[in-house]
Length: 186
Image (cartoon, rainbow, N blue to C red; front, side):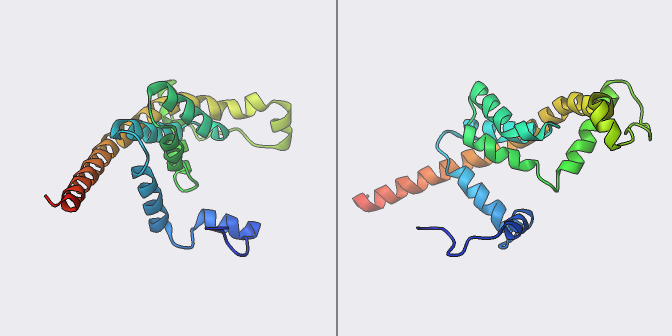
């Protein structure tokens, strides 16, 4: 079968490749960028899908990022595949910064100051007896703070991506016109 490994990777190797790709993060980023540029559609829909996916990454509900991004992209007319690629903004390296910013923004919007005791003591007894009381002081501010942080990430992603994708698509169209003219002898 084409493009498959002769010997599949074991679970530990797959995890290592996910954390640190063998070809490096630059190559992985380059691959994703080229896949994004080759998506069908105009620059606006691709950039909107990518930006929505990036913005949804600010949500503290990790298991729902793909579905939420796809639904929002469909609703606003963005590219659904680009929205899935956009959720890549939320990764093990960026989540601590995203979570800290959503938590602090949520506390600010709720009128709470910084408190060293904001995080409850995590114990097995607390988690099973009253999960809302245990995780509520963390999840509520993060959920409220996720909206403005997500909108900011969406805007900061959409503007440059739209410009770059439009530039790439226009350049590609002009290359195809030149290639067509050369073939026809003009």
